[in-house]
Image 1 (cartoon, rainbow, N blue to C red):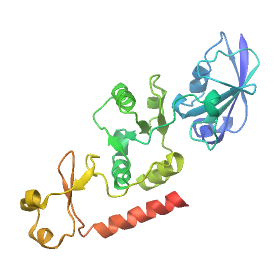
Image 2 (image 1 turned 135 degrees about the vertical axis):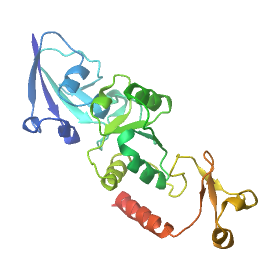
Image 3 (image 1 turned 45 degrees about the horizontal axis):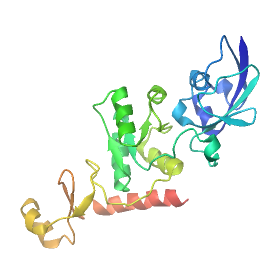
Image 4 (image 1 turned 90 degrees about the vertical axis):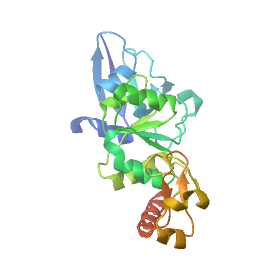
Length: 245
């Protein structure tokens, strides 16, 4: 039997029972497990882990524990640069995949021009497969989903309110923003509409007064500055203020 001591830092403590937060935990094992296994057994999904340091040396998640090891575990999106030696995975992409519980967040991120796929008809293995195939960070409120062994990039959102979730995404990932550039329904890029082709689909007052009409390059939905545009612009301004704060 061997034993090792684990210390989790920053936001990783959110995954631990309250009594175990912010201090070292000693665990015993009958064999020499890969460090990934006890980290997840203690409640922390591996995609949330950005760096593992054993007795001052950066190691991978496949490192086999030895008796007396002192393991420090840091979050993936902490403000530190582990360098190539400590990197557990490639740098995260700027695109996201949201699970069934995050539909309201998906529309808000698309409003900001963030590449945001949303799936409400996929099971867990299918979500992981899509995230991998499309090089996306999988966002979820389901901690168990993040423990899927094949998942490379993923994160558990702490907030339940969509507005707070926007702030969380902007703060953790800092994705590039291009407001009003994506379809709110399907995530397609918006392009300038050919008025000669879309005029029949527009209300009379829009044909007469709209300064600009755009359409989705995927689903062909049309957008123009309507009565709701002022509200959307105010929402975008609020989000941009969060980003720069």
